[in-house]
Length: 164
Image 1 (cartoon, rainbow, N blue to C red):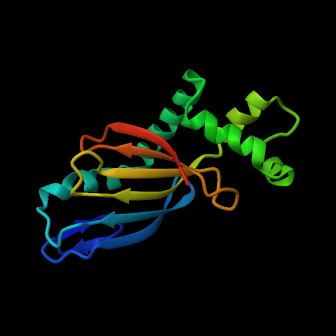
Image 2: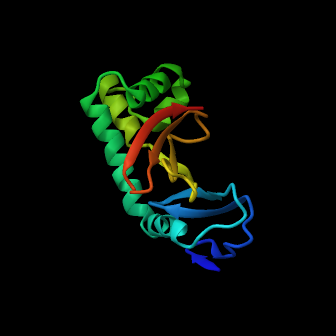
């Protein structure tokens, strides 16, 4: 048995394939899920997941800082593409709820970036390269596109991608 914050007690000798909970992180509701391929797992394999879940707000802040740094330091990347795509394609009314239409496009992109928030976090305790995937959005009511930040078992950011 293993006790995991928000999930409660999980029998590591009789795992289900999928577990999910919804919690608030930095004032946003976020779906958190656990994904298993095997029916059993050593407790040591859950230690990093436990650590990450206990520190989700801090990790979320690190991920968002990474998105900001990527946006401000690279001209052509997933973050810039995501923001520009939505500035170009959102309906004017929707865009006006997210950014000030009277400012420059560059300022709108920076302002839109501040609206990014986690919508789902998926954990893969058996993962050797990726243990957690954080999905970020400006809002599911506006788009199905996500900026995805992956973390490895050492809790380092190991990839950033645009997905839908």
